[in-house]
Image 1: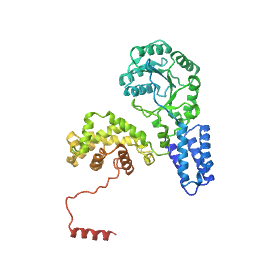
Image 2: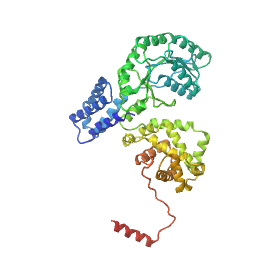
Image 3: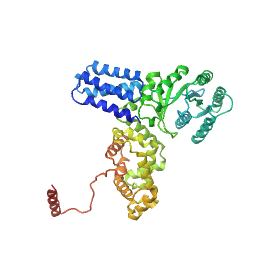
Image 4: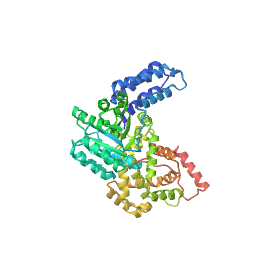
Length: 480
């Protein structure tokens, strides 16, 4: 996510750290920042206003004369990025006497119906009773799609064959009588904005009076997302924008343009196809990622959510490993893979400071994770619990079963052996300590198959005699 703008912006900001800063080379560096924004498909006027504000602060406030002017300028850029995208309040206010009505609108292909399901699942996890409403009568498949999603997450779907306004009105009455706290209206979309669509949405808005109107927009369309948002906002007075497919957006033009062009904040972001992949939009974390500094706060939030979802059995097992009462086995290791996939391995790497720069375009961490998981799945439980019994013939069998080479199995088992003690230590650490260790290990390449092995001082069980140590010193001198 945001790889292109992140690399271009970092290259531009690096110029501020070289040599003595003057007003001229600050302007030259900001021209590079401007180019990075335009290449990322950020709106032209938004880009010019952003550069003007940064330049006014960097030069106008005599930053050059301060102790660390380069750090001051980088801080100014960060603050302006946060201001450009924020502030944001992702909370949904609930009413005591009636259900809160959320109206979802957008163009076809933006992922509106799936986003309705994601939002419903999010509310359900917070202990709120949502109701999904199939009000998209233009596309019959949309009704069926919403019913399938509702069945998957255990949320009821209201539908009938009448007109969109009547469906929405009756759905709200149904929600009142069945104690549903939030009603999510999945309205019709079009391939492009037209007057018929706008009139239908305006009619629902006028007669149903939703509490919040959200526009679902595909982040991959760049600054056009801001233009689409403006058209919808002029007719419906939007309360927020939900950007979908942000995990595949390398440029970031939509995220940086929407708020400035429309005045409407981005409330949520879609970070994948899974129904769990809906997150709060955090301008601070997004600005940090755009500048190549990761998003540790976002990562902490995901890790805390995972811990809350752990079963009692998993918690008990982790405690036993931390206390040394149970060995860390390949079964436990595989459990971590499952959690990493839930978090999104690419997202986790992007959240660790400096990690996105180290990943080359041809590297696929999810594929590497699947290969390791395949090796573990090709072993019987006996080998899971005691990998030391895996000899050469067993390695060949595991390699054949997982579609890898025997030497990859050997390398993986060596890495696992070294990771055992590290994982035991991590279970005794705080959240921040774990993240710091993960960052260090990732930068060393220790978490990748075929990466460098972690050097640890081994115990041979033999104390060397003075003569043996003298012989060892002689050999070292000869090598020099």
